Structure formats: C-alpha cells, structure tokens
Image (cartoon, rainbow, N blue to C red):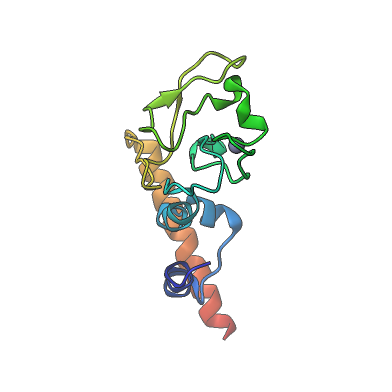
Length: 146
Ligand SMILES: [Zn+2]
C-alpha cells in the first residue's frame, strides 16, 4: 500500500468509528486504491488481456505463454471479451454466454473512478440527514466515554 492511501486513511478515519460498509462507500478511498491496482500501464512481461475485475479492469497479472501475448486462459479468444490493455478501453463490454447486457466499466483507463450520474431524491436527502444524526450521536458518545 502506498503512502497516499495510508495518509488518506489516517487523515479521514483516525478517531472515528467506521464499518467496512463505510469504507466501501468512500469513493475517494476506492479511487485511491483502484488507481493503484487497475491503472492500465502495460507490463510487457504479463498477458496483454484486460480483465473485468468487477468493472475495474486492469491488465491480466498472469505471465505470458512463450511466443504469445497471452496467458493460458486468455490464449482462448472468447476469454478476451474485455479487450486488450494495449488497445483503447471500450465504453462497455458484453460477456459471452452471459445475459447479453452491456457491462459498463467503473474506472477509466487511468484507473480513475467513473462517476455515476445519480438523481438525488427527497428520500436520499432524508437518509443523509439520518446518517448525519447517527454520526453526531456516535461522536457525542465517544466524547462522553473519554
Ligand atoms: Zn491473461
């Protein structure tokens, strides 16, 4: 893990109560981690296939078979449905034998998280308010304890 991630964690989470769900919802943190793991800098010793990785993409981390560009799995064309990291990332892919639906990436080719345009509803705002209140109560509780 690099310092950027550790610093972010210390700055944002020290002294706080948080759950793994909080971490999963923290898009800044996810971006820091995925940027590192899934940026598509081509490593020529490794297989050239792009992986789906739950939508995060990134180069396959298996070694190439001798005299080919691919590992054993990706030497089969059907397994290269996410394209190659040496080629431009398509905006969506379709998994063979799957539902046939377009699967959209969560990150761009720099590993940066693609933001979903989400409509904010009244219900979301209420939920936000609720979460803020819970956070406030937690902070108060922590202060009493110490
Ligand atoms: Zn591979």
